[in-house]
Length: 305
Image (cartoon, rainbow, N blue to C red; front, side, top):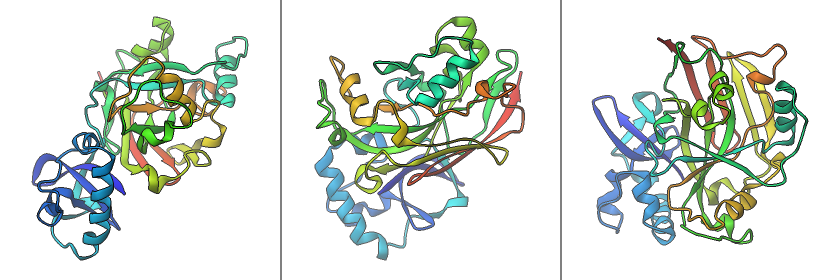
């Protein structure tokens, strides 16, 4: 299944939807025929109901959607929000998780190249979350170097602590796209990653969350990013230094992962800082972030300040 969060043109209330062909179906419109009573109104609430509930709803949707005519909305008639518009916790992120990017990043900064021995974790603030087709507002009084980073996003479904690698993927609800937009000059000034990556709107997520059963093995998926139609990043998730199961194992050591937590697994080479000369996002630029099996996000840069 492919779940989204959306609002209609005549009602700004955010709703949980499921993609069916070229339409989004309001999950609430299926409550009367679900056998579960009133269905959840948000994806975070849905995930929190647990894996038995997800499976039951998936079976119901497979049966009911082909004949269900109400609550349907064409893609171009809705506003797409981030699937989880305000996560309960910061987004967990990984740095330097593709060998090519680790080399690129070190070279751009004139540093000795070192491939990490353990996952490099940091976070982005929840207020950085943005919609998959919304503008990215860049305050030019704060940064002149906004950069792009397409990443595979992992949405935790089953809570856990000290999760083993063998069990890790069973804790995943689904997968999405994350663009870890980064203000490189702020990053350099503060000598750490959190601030330059957490400006408001600097984390588009979406356009949907594809459940793990439909997405399949998270390795082997093509991951790309284009700016104004020009390909900047083009790699495969099989190139992750630390794959998803290892990330979950390492992150959950002594740290409880909860339903709805989001993990951004790192970006491949091709960031703006690594171009010769470096290139950064300009007013009006269109960023297209795409992952095989999930879809495409399109965000345009808009200068403010």
